[in-house]
Length: 287
Image (cartoon, rainbow, N blue to C red):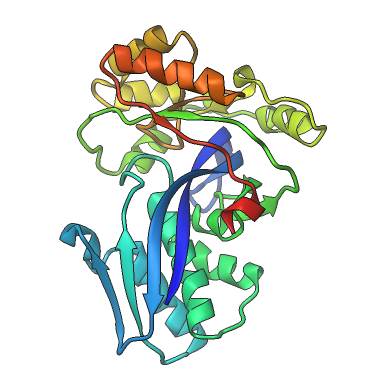
């Protein structure tokens, strides 16, 4: 049996440079894995199957099954696997849980089936499933470019304590497409937020919260009914700024010390909110 953890991620910066001829948007992002995990187990089996406590997550559309079958087609392994998914990362939250599960599936089956694939090959296969999947092949801290699938891992180890909030909002269908469609040319940037953040993290300097940026911060307040008021309540209770996690609706506050993050959590709980305290992960910790 092989057991792997599939971490969530945050986009510390997320910029859109413009719309490409192929219809996708050109993005630049500083991405960071955090210690909120799904758990996957892989065992030999006849055919490829997925078990999960929530039967809705064991459908044919699940990225775990799609990743397993895609890997089998690419490698012609002809082998089977019984996969079990323990879901912890909220679905549709902007934290990349499904993409992380897909990357863990490719890595887990690479080991189970003794395929010997390189990280680059696994990332290329994962990119067929979604733009975030290649990031999770590498983990840690990385730059994402293209439509998000071109990953440059960074040899830095950020040590921060993000505080997450999961707004209790109805699911927004076609969430990411809706947010991208809402962007106007004046929202496009030139990668300057990424470059400023990189100067800090690669220069071994702190990455303050005011350097974080998400192009969707404004659009999400409009797209998700009720998010704007929840956001205001969170910032009022915590006494600091929250950012959108990816395409949302999860929000996070960026804390440099555990003590600070714990105090933020306590203030949020007093206002009836339910924070989740996490920590950033390096590639070594993730492995």
